[in-house]
Length: 376
Image (cartoon, rainbow, N blue to C red):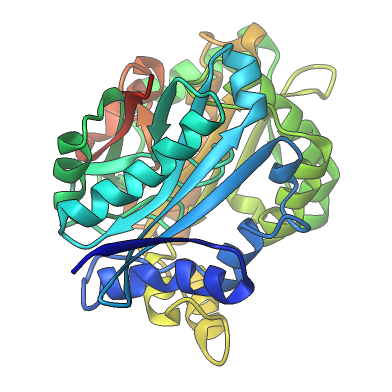
């Protein structure tokens, strides 16, 4: 049957776009469905401030009048200005194992890119680093975190067959929480010397209100920390408010670690969260009627702790600020009874971040990739 590509124009189309993965991953034990409400908000131009500096065009592939794939084209003005490129991003790619379907989706985005005068196509990306990015190339039998992409093993094959090549890779690590061995003594001694020598201390948040009070300071630090990271874009004031409202109100104060200097300035932070992947699977994309129950239960009774975000001011890098925060996170993980710790994607050449895991016998259990293709 011929492949028909339809551009999303109505709310009904958008709901179809969001529900395509439910068909693609039916009965797959590893796919974690995002909350449908969050996905609708992501592509709502009135609610998502990312649209202040970006535009999108969403495509659905139909075969025999049934949706069999989807893809989002993302024109990030702010990213193109920052990197001085003419690049179109793609994201939210899902397809059945059919090259004709995949190539039709890629071609639709590529044609839009050419119309816009773009010279390259990269992805999977989102609007910002807060959106899922990177196609899974290793670890198909591992449960993803709720902020990462899961895809079938045939996705990279179809993508490369269309002519995409590797741009960058990300690693993900998993390790045991050291309940039996404890934190190595040499790390504790080193951490104490760092505090004494640099006049730094761990800031312990006492409430969610206190987190929100200092969250803008954290986001400013995040912007500086991510400035040189591949593909990152500056976060606007409205985006800060958006992320504070959607994410920061749910953070357990015990699982956010910050380091401050003698002037009470935040110079580093590390955010962790109980792994909610199994809870999201049970919720099946909906908070009601019982999705909220599974998520609340996972927040209280948990096995895996996820490392979400971390950042350190440039001036303080290389002196052990990351070590101070990791030690505090490990102490919290041990106190709360977590058994495992898992990272989110870390760039393959970010050796300093990888080094944070080396004392805990990590396993690199997933790899994901950003692809690139010239379209001129």
